Amino acid sequence: MRLRSMVAAGVAVLALTAVSGCGDDEGGDDGGAADGWGYGQSAGSGGGGRLMDTETKGRPSAATTAEIETFVSGRTTCTDLHMQARDYDDEDNPEAEAAGKLWGISERAICYDETRNGVTLMSVNDMKSFQTQAKNRASDGYYLLGEDFAVTGGPTTRANHRQSGLLALVCDPEVQIPSGYTKEKALVDGCTLTDFIS
Image (cartoon, rainbow, N blue to C red; front, top):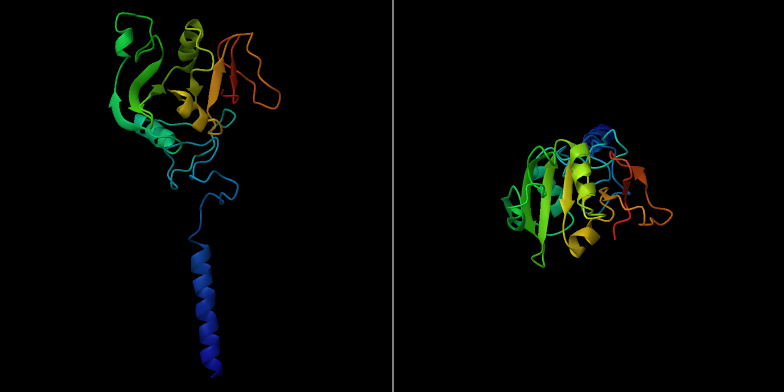
């Protein structure tokens, strides 16, 4: 009888050890978002869509269009994804936002939110060029930037990304950012990156 109790206790200890070793390798996420995405991590790092820390103040990173789509889809609807180098309305404007060297965009894709507003996903390989062109376009707060990608969209998309770790690019000195919000120097003089997304 005593031997059976010792064997049962030993089995219980082994089972607990095995279970404790199968947990979250990234230290848990008790304070994280309900959708499994963390702040300031890499979208393609596995772990159920969890993000890994990046070097520049923790903005999300996504190396591919598929990873950007996964990041955006974790917060808002993104259906009917298709590649599109530039918007049809801008086909005759050589300086319009488009994939290519001028904007520093390596890939550009469009999907649609639940209200059928377009959501633009851009993989950016030259963020300084991107920010320079965005400033020239006078599009304050329109672009939401990660470490190596950008997202634009309508009010629903913007609202759904308020606490995603993406920062809005603001270059108009007249725009006042309320206290308590991030104010990070952009790569272009006169511009600020902020989590104040209106």
